[in-house]
Image 1: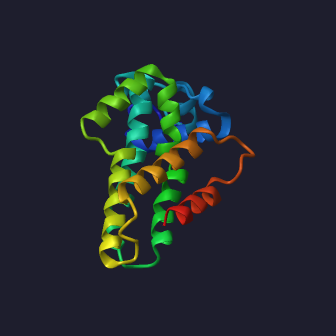
Image 2: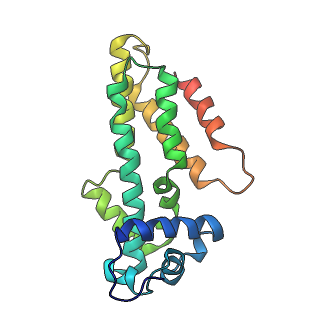
Length: 193
């Protein structure tokens, strides 16, 4: 454990990674400030020092941080038009949605009213989220239509919504022992394109 007064580099990431481990090991109900700081091996007050709004602010920040990473990956998708296969390109973003902690932790944010409110406020203010990913997928599909790799009759926006909605559904309805979600997502991608 780091002693009081000793600087901890990249505190946010240290705490975020610890929270992800707590949830992965013991489930969302085990997520407390004390559990996070114990897992991170740091002083108990560190979370509150960096997140004055307490655990709700921390959970919202964690989800937004992880969703931003997934949205950044999706933002590169339109630049990959014409490269690889359409299915591979869509699958890479779909897998990021299914494996990134941000989308998976979004359910946790929604179980905490304070975190959910902060999360919604940030999305309303323009923070990247599921809608950002959806927009990137639609732009990518439109670019592929322009290149002739996706039919012009394909509704790019509806396909993007279907992919993001499927990922969201699979995340929110998964449990230990549930069918592997990436194979289900690949089936949806194949049906859409």
